[in-house]
Amino acid sequence: MAARSASRSSSSSSCTLVDLVDVDDDAQNVFEDVVIDLTDDYSSSLLRDGELALDRLQARGATWRPGDVVEVRGAHLGSYAVDFLKIKIIAETRSGEHVIRGDPLVRTRALLGKLLNKKNEVCWLHFIEDAGPIYLDISPQSIVRRRSLIITNAPYPEHSLWSLATHSDNGISHGHGTRQEHDAEHFGPLACRWRLTIYFERKGRQMRPVEEALESMPSTDVPDSRYHMPYDALRNRWHGAIIAGGSWNAGRAAHVDLEAASQAPRTRSHGQKYTFFDAFSGAGGASRGAQGAGFKVQYAVDKSPEVWETYRGNFPQARLFKTCTHGFLTQTHGENIRVDVLHLSPPCQFFSPAHTHDSVHDADNIAALFGCGELIKKTRPRIITLEQTFGITHDRHIRYFRALIGQMTQHGYSVRWRVVRLCTWGSAQDRKRLVVIAASPGHRLPPFPAATHSETGGGGRKPFTTISQAIDGIPRGHDLHQVWRVHHFEPPRAPLDPHKLARPITTGGAELYHPSGTRKLTLRELASLQGFPLHHRFVGNDTSIRKQIGNAFPPNTVDVLYRHLQRWLLQEDGIVPLRPNVAQVLIVDDD
Image: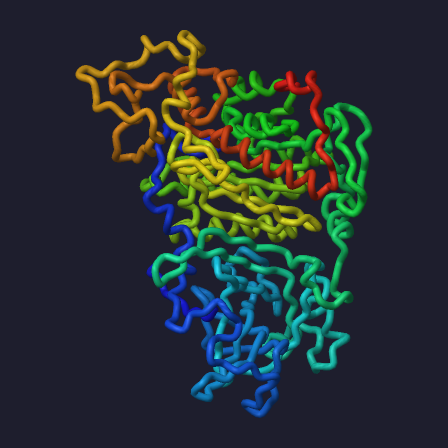
């Protein structure tokens, strides 16, 4: 599919929302920098109707063939100025014009911090919509010169420009003088070890991105064995041998596996679990969801004193670090702390679309974001998840988002992100959040879980969870559900439909209240709408508890995400899940 670009003008603990306030109106604008306008001759075929494929083309004093890599000028795809093209096909149109069509590549500096800016390191752009990949068309006149490209899954600096310079016959010498830099830029070999995939959906004559993934080049896409590094070597270089089935094995010796997926399927040991670290844990929304999905909540860190008692009361066996990320790193200096999965919910107030005035906490929020890279380096997880406000991807904060992705890719993590409508994962609120999944070197990047809920249900999905379903099961007199204590309206407000989703609340909108219109919601009702189970306890005054609830990543949506990730990890490890017996079914929580 050929395309042309469309230009665009352009301290709390964990974070989902504060006081149940969020702004969703701009969520659809998250990826507008790569909106694509379709040309009239848009086609899903590599070779279009009326075109004739050529095995070579003589142009600009040289012969060009499919498979060649060429430097180009004046070519764009979305917001990206394309630097190189790997030719897929050369076609002659009915009018006798010649079109060169292929896969675009850009220098890593074009990603503006999402990848390290290294000389002659390039990234493959892979744009996809339902009908297939989007190819870039150029004319022969756009070609500058032929270039040499190495595709590798080895980490930088292996097979990089300077590591190859002394063995090259292209006249490029090792050095960093002005002449050497110029020659390297324009004539030196290129190395591609990353691929940026953007998934689009059609909106009339435009395509808008809905998901992006920045992945280390898959082993299967490395055509030359000289530049291939086995997955187990990548894994061992970063975090050592993995424990197939999970690092937690109830105190018994676990099986250390250097090549987990290559062996015959085996069962998981009884009590074996993947371990979980909750960074910026707050009251434990992510921990609750991960634990419900079957993970061992092993560590947590949060600097806010108002959440400590709540977290400790719900997860007494987890090791809670009552400090900031820097304090955690200082306290554990020299200590080996490794986990299977790390979750990050850095404070998001500074990046929220609702944040329109400077705050004394802004610097702390930014510092917390930049501490994520050190947490990753310390814990070296197989999988990372991150939840943030989509406002971090807007123009005024986009540099922070790019830096956040860069903190993962600099360690070799492949990263996937999208804005998720949380009601499609079971939330009773119609709320959108930016969710990120990352996989460490030597591990495949998981996809996002499929939607479990939809507006009408069907197709294996349940109908959206309603307000009524979320709050009607709370027993009278339950903890934090003293109805007589909450404010009652006189006169009553307009009733809400209890069989609908709870609407998001904006800073200028009305407060969420009970569907009857007669009163405010109790704290327990707010917790249930936020996806907390009834057995999750909160400690603090009403204001503190309300904030703890509002700041949480909804546990029921975390449960969906983490059940999906557990299935993925078991599959990658070649593990057949242990069939539960009656006794195991009765065990709800061993923490």
